[in-house]
Length: 154
Length: 340
Image 1 (cartoon, chains in turn orange, purple):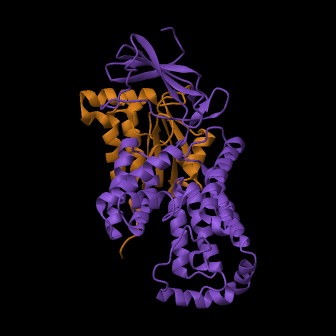
Image 2: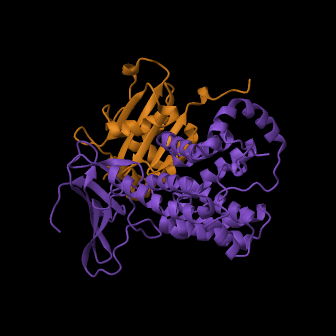
């Protein structure tokens, strides 16, 4: 195994083709069908949406290199996580205005931990893991819902 | 009154259930409605008692693929106990007990207040009620212990069993012993789904056999539990595991892979084999197919050298290797296999 990063985004618009991923990251739209099946098991992610996999380069299916780059950066200076490709991409997806809900997994194998919360919570969960070796993680799936969708008391 | 069937108050299974007080305000309401709806069926059950067992088994088997054996056993027992003339409380209790016992292998061989649970509770000086609570709670909590190791599960079972015993009027120590005993029994004797259903079937069939009911039930659980488990092994998967984890990629031949964890130290780093001297590998076997190697971590004495992966996502070269990078205390990008 390697470090695989994949997920699904639920958009505010039906025009999925118009959605643009953050610049500077290589994204594949065709993910492992079995991973797609796993994703569909999560209530907030089932149905229409954009499946994606973040990869090291156009020939890769994993993101091991991107994760290791992030680890190296954080080991030198933890505040630089947003300067890494993976850190910046995750942050932009979590707080993207066109995304109503989303899920992103970082797994060396299969999903072992499911963490659901607001984008801020998911970002903190990501940061807790971002500096750790990819093979020692709890293989999390972060699932978030945009604040605009939360039920208002009024 | 329980009708002509003297065991209807315990869902036709006196080995499994008790009715200590005999009344409940809700049961009157339930009985009024159910009397009208279930009278013809109950009459049939009383004429042919084994029908109730068959319906219960069929319900459990039919629902298991959709809601799992745990809930299926609960629904089956609740449904049949209600149809058999039991009150709502009895029906729900039958369902709850069936669910709790179905969760682990105790339903295959014993039920609360008869075999394992009574033995463990009474042996430790407790009451049947508190003993059943202890065992039921610790068994029902088993699904939530997925991330624990064996020792942690044992301790958790003991604590939960003790707490439940106190709630049921017993002593903490007695319940703790029951919970711990139940965990160890289940861990040692655990069957998969087929075993549960088979045991359930055997017990239900034999428990109506008159004077030999107790021996019959035990025999039925042993015999049918083994048969059901063997059938499942043969029909479904030679090594299916409940705790086999989620899909973790595929092997080169296309078979799905399910990851297990290699032994790790306090910092979560792979541990070398303590008995090995010099270069060696630790194999990580597939969680659902112990005959397949999922990955192999190579060490040179205590130094991690590389990891060879035999499974990956579509597009991965298999097998491939990740060399260990001490700078980041992790494995680097994947690459083709190389020599030692």
